[in-house]
Amino acid sequence: ILIRATNVARCAIAFVADNLTQAGFTFYRLEREATPPAQAAPRDRIENEFYRLRPTSTGIEIEDLRAGRRLVLHFEDDGDRGDEYNFDPVPGAATISAPAKISSCVAEDGVARKRIILVLEYAVPAALARGRAARDARVEPLEIELHATLHAGLDRIDFEARVNNRSRDHRLRVAVSTPVAASESIHDTSFGILRRSLAPAEANGIEDVYPTGPHRTFTAVESADFSVALVSRGIYEAEVRAEPAGASILLTLLRAVGWLSRSDLATRRGGAGPELETPGAQELGEHRFEFAIATAGCSLLQGGIVQRASAYTAPPRMFAAPRAIEALAGLISCDNPHVAFSTARSRPRAGSYCARVFSNSPETERAQFRFPEAMRARVVDLAGNAVKRAGMRRKRGGALELELRPFEIVTFEVTRRKQPR
Image (tube, rainbow, N blue to C red):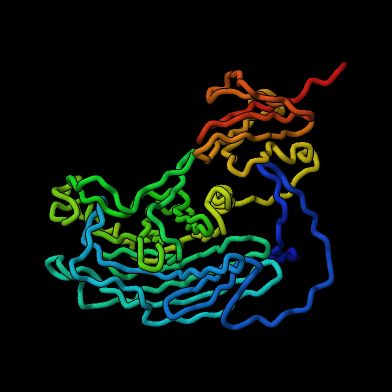
């Protein structure tokens, strides 16, 4: 028996997807073209039209080329004598932020994408010392391989951190130092924006009021002329720390602890659950984290940070598409940048769907929504029942113009127009 095997030719393609259709489909065709001449990559930096990135002795310096501002990204490691409920700092233990070793290289310098890789190694105490009042004198290497990527035409910096953790009883965070003098931190919620004071007025109770808080997809600081957001995928704790030169945003990557609950913490009076050992919560081994930085030379809302964060956490998907779906290239579009798309889903009736949006503005906003030409839209409530809205205007082509209250959620039911017989 003669068997012949053939390998199909494959290649990786990178291109800039300009003008993506909002909440819909954008179509591209691959065509063969002359290969552009290769360009020599600089050995110590990468840049696009928005940012320039350089390695430093502790991490990466980020220069915003439009605003003329600089940020610095580095990592911080603290001792943690807490449990799975609460962080508990080790008394007198200094934060480790300077790597014992660091190296960098420009790994990619293409037309569409540029990438620099840093390899950092930190000397981290192996665990808590006996008695849990100090960090051990023994150290283990904590290795971080940091990939920083710039895409042509995209005003965002994408990061991937690959961490090999060999130590116990510690907390690892990524920190972004900003020049913004902030008095509050800004976070997204499911349908809006939440602001938290950096100096909370509430008194300590059973637990100390600690500066970390929930993080959904972004944590940010802003001023009238410059704003910075740290965005992530699947990371849920952050802090904004006021400093003399501005504010730093810190994102918790690892909390390596060995107990479900303990009753001897300084930041909490008493236990929070069963006092059980949980060695798996020490998070030993390899981990991978994804996060990004977005900036704007204005306030967060004016800079469209909510939409830009959503574009990172829910990136577009590519697939081979039939031409039949071109009629529904855009499910819904809006002319007001303060209104964000939430979700769309099909309805039982063939060819119909629901689309949901929300305002992330604390002010009343007027917006116009457009739908495919063959479709007709109406406003419904969260249960899908039709509602009447005062002041709503139906425009030529089926567009709807309406006024949204601060942080209001609006749902549209979109169906095919009846064709004349």
